[in-house]
Image 1 (cartoon, rainbow, N blue to C red):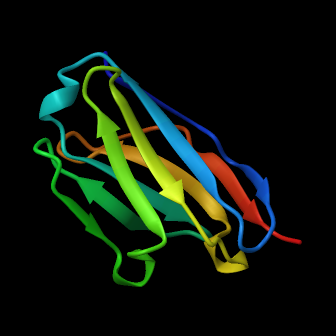
Image 2 (cartoon, rainbow, N blue to C red):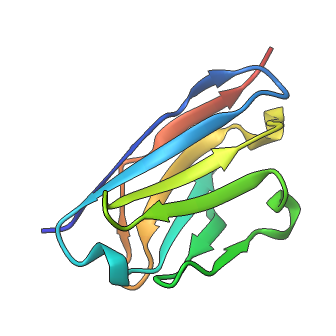
Length: 112
């Protein structure tokens, strides 16, 4: 059984940074295309993806501030978020794209 557990969310002032983590257990981690999504009201929107070979893609407006990475030894997915703004406030989810498996989400709040 594959499980995803996010961590690292919290309250951060504008301009601050956070690093989200997603621990994946079960399955064959190194083969997965993984992604981070975020949800404010209703819809979840993709933030970034990383393929099994390490290729990355980002939502256009976030590239340069957010960095997705993975550790295939530790079975971990990361999202480094820099220069955060209040508009980045959301619940952030990690996902195994092919199987449509989600973690439970972690809240990120950007506020003074």
